Length: 419
Ligand SMILES: *Cc1c(COP(=O)(O)O)cnc(C)c1O
Image (tube, rainbow, N blue to C red; front, side, top):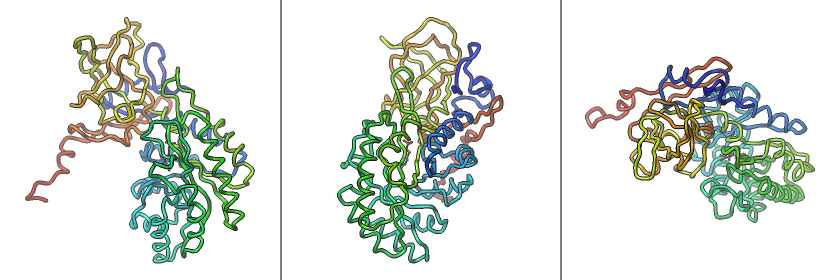
């Protein structure tokens, strides 16, 4: 299913033309397709149907309440990495019993809040963190269900800033210290060991790193069980990539991914948690801006649009490729553009040397694959207001977050006298 496509020469999100939305809320804006999110979620459900599995949406990919809610309504749990995300998941109606708490270093305050909510499990990343969880559980008279996040030391073959499963990364407990960590956990009050967790990185487009990591986890699970531990749940993390570039990316489907799970871990007869983020929402959203000016400078022709790096950080942060198209499939002669925003940084570049039909001031420009790690990473650098978010469902759309006013942004600052 393609939720975003040209029809009769105009670009549509489901059955709503982007021009209609732009007329209602101005540009730039994020636009999400409900059908696209649900189709990806359903693909995971179908792939996992032979297993006792819980799909915990990794909220950090896109934490808008409406997105979490539509997944929760379909039965999804949530994977959170902060108290704020935990509160968002609860507010959107995810039952605490379906929420797992991941994250490199949870503070005492965050641990206590999560214990009070009776969340499903903590994915623990270090021994000091385990000790804090135990102490907090005793104080609050609770039992914390814990898994250790194991760092399996595999190369996910992804961008270095989103690779997390190598031994030099800050994440998790090294495989060789795992037995010791589990032994320690068993002896601590307020702690109930329930399984093993891992998450090796993001935008992974090959099954090989998953296969290697899962095989190491299978070996560890067998060893821990021999030592008498209960390993009933394996949390596989997220990380499955999406096709940002239809021509060159070949991300595996959820079904192919689950095939690897079956081959490497199926014999353990345990239940599974998966934590997909990007692969649920990445291609279910676009960022829409409009052309401010077309500027010729030396050899280059710059398409300067009103969306910028503060709205969508991925291209400048990760050098990520995103397909970029015009609102009209105009048939105009192709031009080679550098597509940039107006922010005072050279890094404010969405694409270099992209060939597309000639554009004019006011034309809408669509940056595809912006549903994950888009709005959540936005800032108001250059005092540019956070951009509105829009959800499309069939031939209807709603503005699910408004553009803040300049007064409300400036009003957050207190001067010395009023502070
Ligand atoms: C970021 C993250 C995810 C989601 O990763 P995606 O690549 O978006 O699927 C899942 N689990 C943990 C622990 C994470 O940090």
